[in-house]
Image (tube, rainbow, N blue to C red; front, side, top):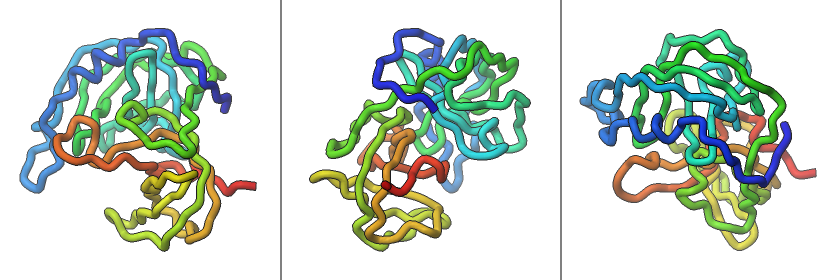
Length: 219
C-alpha cells in the first residue's frame, strides 16, 4: 500500500451519496431497518478505495474517499458483488441503497462495479500526539502509541483499550485476543465514531480495528 499526505483533488460523487443517507438511524430495539434506509439512484465515478476488511469480506466492506467525502461500503447481508476490491483502486459503480446504521452513513447496495485504475497512493493524516476530530472519521490516520490498560468489553467480543500516544489518549477497539497492556503499536486505518457521525449527542472518536492488519507492533 502506498501512503501519501497529499490531499485528493477529484470529485467522484461521494458527497451526493453521503447527503442521501437518512438522518434517522435503524439501530434501536424496535426500529425496522427501513427507518434508516433509502433507495437511491446515484453514480460514483473514480472513487478511491482507502481501506478494506480482510479476505473475501473485502469485497463487501470497504472505505472510499474523494476530495469532499469519505464513506463506508457495507453491503446488505447476503448481497454480493464479484469485483475484487483492493486498497489503491479507483472504482466506478451505481448506488441503489444507502443506510444510516447507528449514525454511520453506509452504502448498502451497489452494482456495475468497474476498476478504473489500481496502485494509487492512499491519503492519511499523521495523528500521533493529536486529538482525533470529526474530520478524521472514515479517513485514514496513522497513530503510534502504547496500550496502557487491560481493556474492557465494549460490544460483542470487542475490547476497548486506552491507547497512549504522546500526551493524548484514544480508544482502541478490537476483536483481537492478542492485544495486551504495554504493547507498542502503530495503527494505520480509518478513524471511527461511536455512535456515527450522523448521530446526535456525545460521540467517542476511536480506532476500530476492523482489519487486524491495520495495527502492527512497532519494531
